[in-house]
Amino acid sequence: MAYNSIFKPGLFEGQTIIVTGGGSGIGRCTAHELAHLGAQVVLIGRKEDKLIRTTEEIKDDGGQALWFSCNIRSEEEVKDTVSKIFAETSTVHGLVNNAGGQFPSPLAFINQKGWDAVISTNLTGGFLMAKEVFMQGMNRSGGAIVNIIADMWGGMPGMGHSGAARAGMENFTRTAAYEWGCAGVRVNAVAPGWIASSGMDTYPESFKSTIKTLKAAVPLKRMGEEAEVSSAICYLLSPGAAFVSGTTVRVDGAASQGNVAIFPLPDHNNSQPYQGFHRAVTPALFSDEEEA
Ligand code: ADE
Image (cartoon, rainbow, N blue to C red; front, side):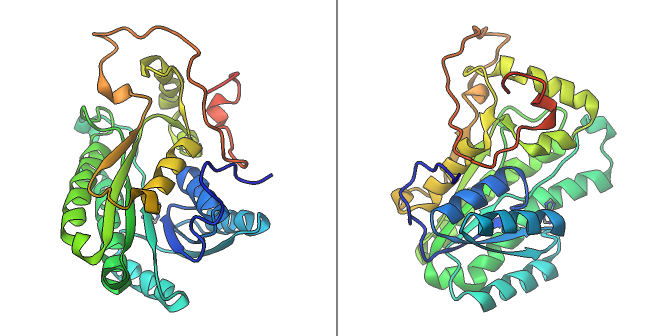
């Protein structure tokens, strides 16, 4: 079995593309698709076991991958890791700023330590990665950066720290696109909505039962697939998006465009998922359901 990408074989041949958070979830899926399309992918994350496993999967499938363990919250570690990557490859063509993490909590119960941790992973870390990749080479070669944010358009009740960080990343995307356009660097974002991804299994039990009900609030009446996010990322990295910069693609089944309390959403089965990822793993919380 191979990745069933909608893009042409060899699209990213000869390119080196970094994927942060590449060991699991959307990052892992994206790394697989990019490698299937010919890229050498560089996986970055904190958990070595996940990075090693995904690297081995990609190599078993015939792709090229290497990994570096790095805490993206640390400027020194990011500088050092990016310079190691440039020692391995003369050009970095793409960066997928996907690493992130948060914990559910009402604002009233988030202390400064928790707030700062989420902001530094989901906002500062993405900035540090983009800045270093830009300063250490992309400012001379050009390239494409895709920042993975979230559906935070109406606020993010229950995860306000993450919403604030992702909104910041969306604005950073616009500024970087404008400032770095002169170097031939495009910067865009992808905002996934509710995607059936392994990260969902890391949430507390109480939140997992909420997750199971979420598709009721999606006009397409289903959760999204990791592959549906990956294909948006691949498009933004590709030459087909050569004039697209400073924008965000929402991959959320239109959930962010209205309110189910004002406009009820009928049940239906009219949206078929695109399931291109041959190694997709159904999150355990959905494994007892017929479909996510
Ligand atoms: N994934 C989640 N948090 C991370 C961090 N701080 N550094 C790298 N990858 C991460």
